[in-house]
Length: 460
Ligand SMILES: Nc1nc2c(ncn2[C@@H]2O[C@H](COP(=O)(O)OP(=O)(O)OP(=O)(O)O)[C@@H](O)[C@H]2O)c(=O)[nH]1
Ligand SMILES: [Mg+2]
Image (tube, rainbow, N blue to C red):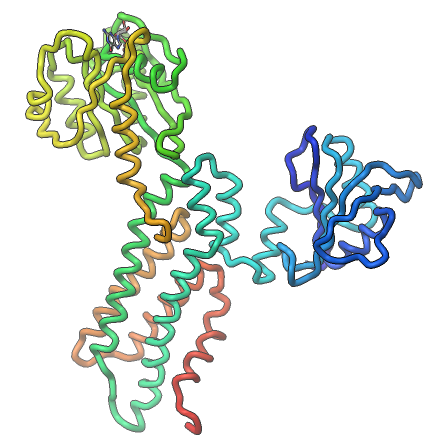
């Protein structure tokens, strides 16, 4: 990490302002060679107005603002500088090229945040939150990433670590004393904190689906028999004529997907080919594709046409999706009904909401569908302002390991003759996996010594 890196931190292309960042031991030395006038007393975190000077052609090439940050108090933890130049790809490229000539090197993607992590400015969950924050595409995703960046998840993991550290220290001390003073092991003192940890672990694991919805959004799929009005509903929800609509059954062959935002959550809404008796090969292919789409759906909107009788295909379709999250949409409520909502409920033993809609463009009414989707999302993403959640597969995998380790530790604790060595081994594993979540597994032995020794009394 001795090299000084430089990169354009704003998107390439034209824009009002572009920001070039440098990080590393030579950041200030390099900037000093290209910024004029160099302030008499260059203070940190001040913005200085001046010119970017090309030492080769001996000419000023842009009017810029420069700010300097000291090591230990910058994003990366290293000496840093920022040059705010005028936007425009040619200008910023020229500035960067000159910085490279003066000894800076190209920063690979994520290098600034990697250095921040390696220098202890962020832990791994916070570094991951930076990536999520940049990629967030909805209000809710942004809120979740900001909470993680603020250290919500890290705090929770650190509390769990502190509790496991205490238990481990107690067991280690017990093992040491066993030979001298006989077993002095208090089973109940172990049971309560381990059970509490297991509960916390289960809560975090359960938050994964919620965190994922907030971060990456949810796939919502419209399904139903041909001609019930799925494409019409897609168009109405998107407020644009995206899919072809016709009175001919089997109009939609391929899946059509489009982005949408409801209740602050990013949605990928997909219209599929109706499922029924295919009349042609192409229609059959379309139906096969629908089935694949249903597999991946986070929410299925099963659409019925209330002016046409239900039949076997509705039953088959319902049987296929009943174990996945779904809502029923009763479309064409402007037409004379041939069945009631009570009959629909009874036929499928369905307890959830039935959303009455009119999909036809000229008189569309989809407010119940929007409210229903919003209600579903809220029920799946309900979070209190300070509740912690996980949204990364990596966190989920590690916490699952922690939970399995805890199960084994709990089994050992309730044994009559506890095997202290085995228990200590399980607690070490739990600690190691928890440390890995925040990227501190290399601290596993170091930090523990402090906790262990703090348990001994003075003079022992
Ligand atoms: N009266 C009435 N007609 C509707 C409504 N929604 C859709 N339609 C009509 O129903 C017909 C079929 O609509 P589509 O949206 O193409 O139906 P689909 O379910 O996508 O059909 P496939 O693609 O064949 O599976 C069209 O003529 C629409 O105008 C509605 O709420 N009321
Ligand atoms: Mg269609």
